[in-house]
Image 1 (cartoon, rainbow, N blue to C red):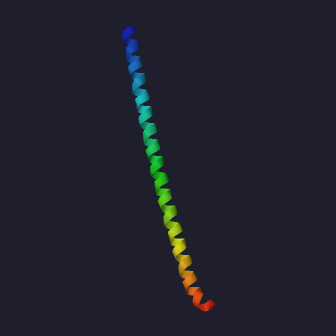
Image 2: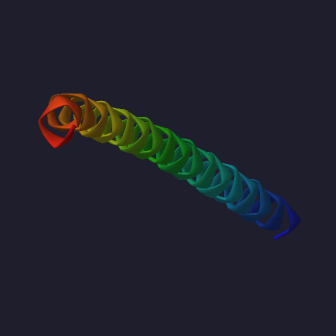
Image 3: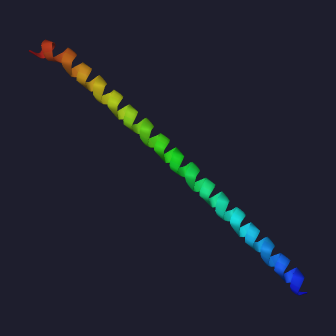
Length: 64
């Protein structure tokens, strides 16, 4: 009886460890995705700003 109980406890511990590992992996994946999204957003903003600057430079001579 006691031996079986101990084995079951061990199994539960293993399951918990696996769950923790899975959670950690998910968190890491989420962090990576967030970082990638942030990088993409920053790149898009920079490109838009550059385009706006170019447009302003092109329009400035025409206005004046």
